[in-house]
Picture 1 (cartoon, rainbow, N blue to C red):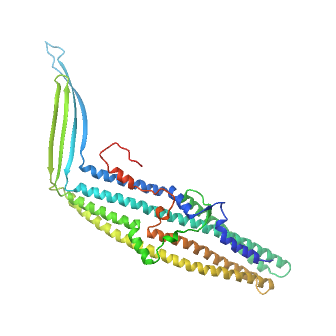
Picture 2 (cartoon, rainbow, N blue to C red):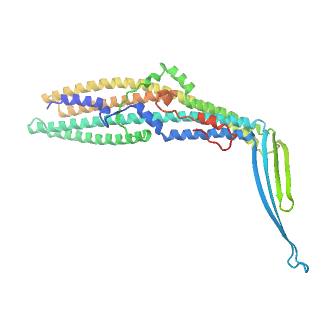
Picture 3 (cartoon, rainbow, N blue to C red):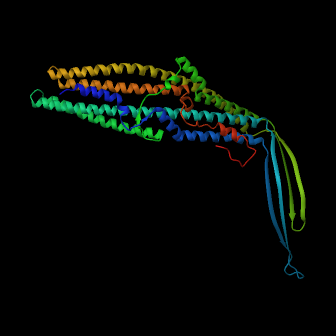
Length: 459
C-alpha cells in the first residue's frame, strides 16, 4: 500500500483546515471584533456606569445652587362650648384656614468644599470613561483568544482525524501483512493500540472545539464560521521595545484611569479639609393665608442668613481629613502599580511575539523533516528493514511537530493582540472597526446643565 500520497494530502489538509470547516463564508478577526463590540454586555455595563458617574457632577454642583420649594396647607379647627341651662346643647364653632407660600435656601459659601467636590466628580467621570476603554480592550482581547482557540481546535480536530485515517490504514496493512506471513500479531496489536489512542485524542479535540465555540459565541454573539488568522494590525506595533513601553505609559487606559483617580483623591482631600471652615447661607419665604372668619391674611415674607463655624464634631471632621489623605496616598501607590503592570505586560507580550516567531520557524522545519522521515520509514518498512512500530513512532513525531506548529501560530497572533492591549491600542477606534464608539463624554457634558430639574438628556 502506498502511503506517500496519503501523508502529503494529510499535511496539506492541516494547513487549510481552518478555512474548510464550519461554513461557506469567511469570518475574519475584524468581523468577529466588530460583532463582539456591538454585542458585549460588559461594555454596555461600563458605559452605563460612566453615565451614572457623570450624574455625580450635577449632584456636586447642586450644593451651591438654590433650593426652591412651594407648599400649601389647610386646617379646620372646631370647638364645642360647655352646656348650660340657658344653652343646653353648648356652642359649636368651626374655622377653616388655608396657607400657601414659597421657600428659598442657598449656600453661598462653604470654604470651597463644593468646588472640590465638583472637581472630584469630574475626575471620577473621566476615570469612568477610561474604564470603558479598559473594558473594551479586555473584551476585544478575550475575543481574539476565543477566536484563535476555535481556529486551533479545528486544526487539532483535523489533525486527529488524519491520524485516525493513518492508523486505520496501518492496521489494515498490518493485518494484510500478517495474512501473507510478512507481519506479526505484535504489529497488529501495536496498530490497534495507536488507533485507540487516536480515537481518544479525536474525541478530546472535539470536546475542546465545542467549548471554544461556546466561548466564542458568548463574546461575539454568533457561532463561529470559517475563520482565518490573517490580519493587518501588526502595523500598529512600534519598532522597538522601548518605544512600545513609552507609548503604553502615555496612552494606556489603565494609566490614564489611575491619573484621574489621583485627581479625584486630591479633590476629596481638599473637600474634607474645607469642612473645618465656615459656611454661609441665605434663606427666605413668602406666602399668604385665607381664613373662613378673618378673610385674607395678606402676603407675608421672611429673609435671613446664617453663618456657622464648626467648633467640635466629635472627631468626625479630623477622621474624614485623615481618611482622605490616606486615600490620596493610596491612589498614588495604585498608579505606581499600574505603571509596573503595564510595563511588564508590554515586555511579556513583546517577548511572546519573538518566542512565537522562533517556535514557528522551528516547528515548520520539524514538520518538514518529520514528513520526510515518515515517508522514508514507510518505504523501509515495505522493504523489510523497518517495523510497523517504527512507522507508528514516526507518525507520532509528525503529529507532535504539527501540534507545535499549530500552537506556535496561535501564540503569535494572541501575543500580537496582547501587545496591542498592553499599548492601549486594542480599541475600536485604533483598530478602525466599523462601529459607533461607545463613550459617555457627550452625556457628561449634557448633565452638567442642572438648572432644569425635569429635562431629557440626549443619548
